[in-house]
Length: 139
Image (cartoon, rainbow, N blue to C red; front, side, top):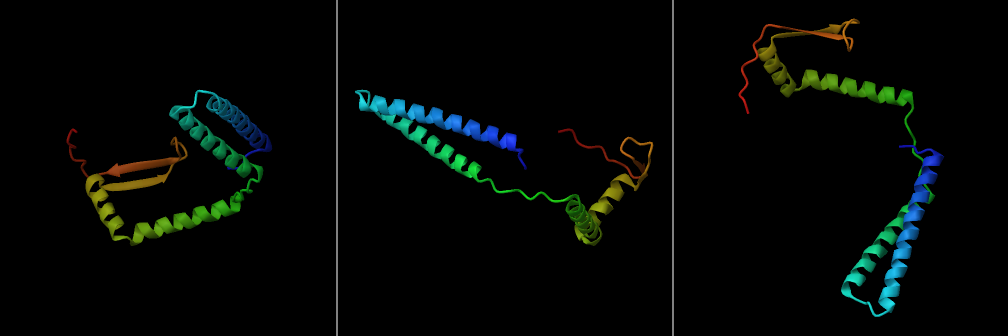
């Protein structure tokens, strides 16, 4: 989201190069039109190149005055994360759909226990007791 000044300069230089090449191509097409080679296909190519040139100019204008991006601080990110976890917790305990999903999960898997385990690869251990996973059809 936040480019370094070097990245911004390189991106701008690339846009300027593409613009110069496009303008050169437009000049060549105009020379052909001024001569005896005027045709619909050349006119169509000229229109396409002019549209490319206009787009590149807009991109250069936009890159000349980049809007600063305010990245959130670690504290703000923590706050957002905690709010989302609290919201998730309320959804998991208050929603009829979640209650039904948990009932189905219990029917399929039985008791499901989760606890912290420092010896586990991701620090969490899961134990499934009872239940029966039905045979699933082959698709």
